[in-house]
Length: 397
Image 1 (cartoon, rainbow, N blue to C red):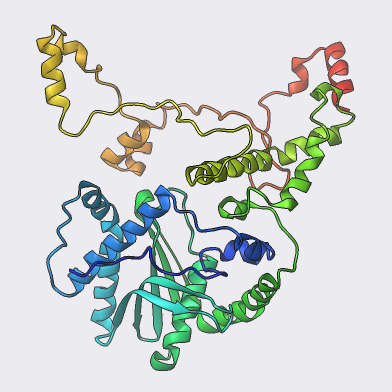
Image 2: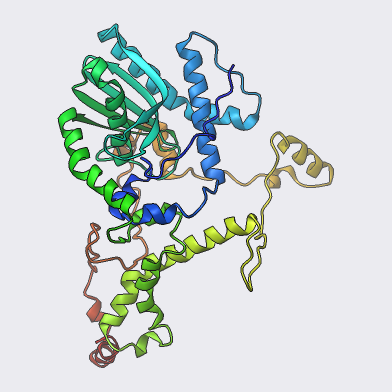
């Protein structure tokens, strides 16, 4: 079996995976280009899972046996990606029954440089038949990814259109996300005209702006995976307002506006500090030194090696331990685990009166957040007497 290696592939400056970021924050693209691609365990594992999924699919489609993975980690990864493999095979079989001329392509290199100069990527699975292009993407993360409006999949779809539309006369595109860790499948169906309109009026101008290095820095969730997040001058300027308040105690701040400045930026500051820390840990592992700092190993933990449980128990018993005390008493399974036994709907019908809702811990969020505002069961004012409340208002007003 030929060795498949996804890690050696090139990466585009304006990548499809980073489209959410460079379309929202144009200057970030060139800023990111100053930093090397630092690998991580999560990225390496994701790459390995894609390679294994491709190997399994190629064997299945060629009528060969399942690849033999001797390495325990690869065996586990093969199990992990099977929902994606099965989805691709089942989708292809279903389409092929309706259209005998259906074609399937795996890990196809696609270029979308008609709209994004130098733009290219790799589509996990493409199926074309009956005027429809179906693009299936494997996601291995534990944060749910939605297909609707997903710029990465839309760009891959554009790349596939750029490559195959003149051959197959494609009228519509369906892109699907299969995320095995969350048992999550999501899809969106768009007509080609709508997709091309988005590309012409949204993507192309954004790409031109990003490559020029112009435009405004815009902070948001897209900063999380930006390679320049740790040193973004825009973020530093934003947080300077907080730094100016740090020599005061909360009760000494001049107005509710000062408190609001801290509250509105608290989450972003925390994320910024984490980004700096994560970058420094990676850099220090590669030999970079920071004045007054050193890299240390945090407190570790221990885990029983595979197959050692019986030996451990026997040794403890031989040493005089009571076997009944070696194992914890049986505990009631969690609600999620119990739901799986009978199905969620049946479970809710059986147990609606047996569970109580425990409110989550209150936290401050931005006013424009889509989450509903907390409403107290009784007015919080009633918890203060008049004198205490007037003193409290003096502090925050």
